[in-house]
Every structure is written in C-alpha cells, then in structure tokens.
Amino acid sequence: MLQMNMDETWHNISHESDTSRDEALAKACAETGSPWFSGHFPNDPILPGIAILSMVTGVIKHHESENGNKVRISAIKRVRFRLPVKPDDMLTISVYLPPQGDGRSYHFKVTLHDQTACTGIVSFELLP
Image 1 (tube, rainbow, N blue to C red):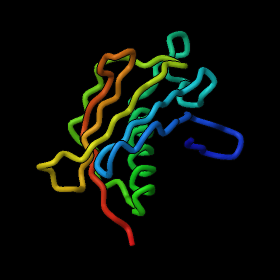
Image 2 (cartoon, rainbow, N blue to C red):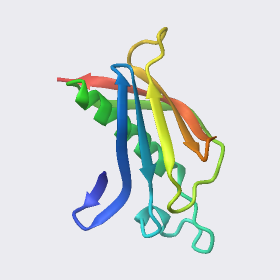
Image 3 (cartoon, one colour):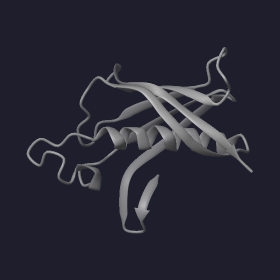
C-alpha cells in the first residue's frame, strides 16, 4: 500500500502472486476518498494516469524486492491509456520481463473488467 503520510492512503495494492521470477500479478484500487481524485474532475472523478503508473511501479518494486533486489525506476515509455478508471474500480496489474528483453524493462498491462485500461513499459536499474 502506497502512503504519502501516516494518515492518507492514496491506493491499495494486493500482491496476488509472483508467478515466476520474471512476472507478477496484483490487484489495485483507489477508493472514493483517495487524494488522487481531489481536483481531478470534481463532478466526474477519474483516476489520473500518474496514479495508475504509481500502482504499476509499486508492483514492480515489490516483485523485485521479493527477489532480493532494490530498484530505481529509470524510464516509463510507450504508455497507452485506453479506459477511464473511476473511484473504487478494481484493477488487475500484470508485469513481466519479456524473454527477448534486456532484463531491465518490465512490460505491463492494467485491466479493468477484463478490458485493457493501460499498457506500457517500465525500465529500472538495480541499486546496491
């Protein structure tokens, strides 16, 4: 769970499984009262894209931590937002290292009700 301070929870992440060393699956949700929604269309709240990316990078950092690594996100690219995400929507986040990849870039897919909400690539660096 990402927290900006001790009193404010911005979103919740449930790490479902680390299916292998190269992939992970998680559920994530930003509830109605989340600060992510403040000012982002008061009469029709939509989760900002940066919030979805924060969830994705949180899943990657957790997965790498489970594998004994500490990482720093170095780039986020080829991001496509395809569906609006509303308060309390449950997202499924899948991340994987492609077999022909460089080993330092996760491809990700965020789904909402079995439809693609967001895709992209997150690159990282290993920290000592």
